[in-house]
Length: 125
Image 1 (tube, rainbow, N blue to C red):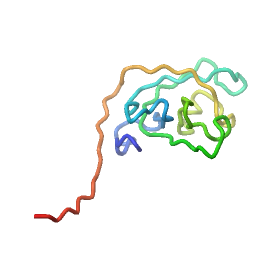
Image 2 (image 1 turned 90 degrees about the vertical axis):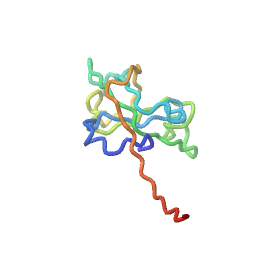
Image 3 (image 1 turned 120 degrees about the horizontal axis):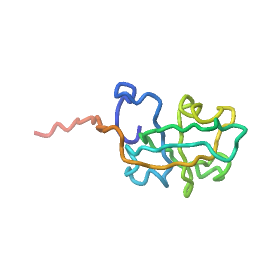
Image 4 (image 1 turned 45 degrees about the vertical axis):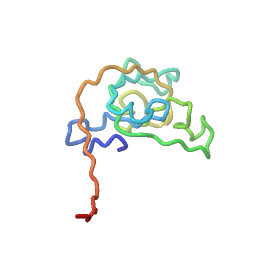
């Protein structure tokens, strides 16, 4: 993902990760942030009394061709989390699609190390 953490499954994160909209991601400052998410407002789809703690590992790019409330979820100024289905289903029924959440950010629970690869073909001597 955009944060450069490599294979998150091998690092023990499984599917408890999210991509952040630009309002939360910033210029990468959001990477590694831990958030507790709770489904709110739509009790038809929310699973009462549940929450999930996720780690920010990716960026959700804006889609300016779509309105903020109809597909442009990651457009500024929206604060949006994109979750794997398995994580979403811990707090809401998947059929619901896009759901409002309450969230709180707290100190990183598990350290992450970034791993970038570069193709260095500089053959200057």
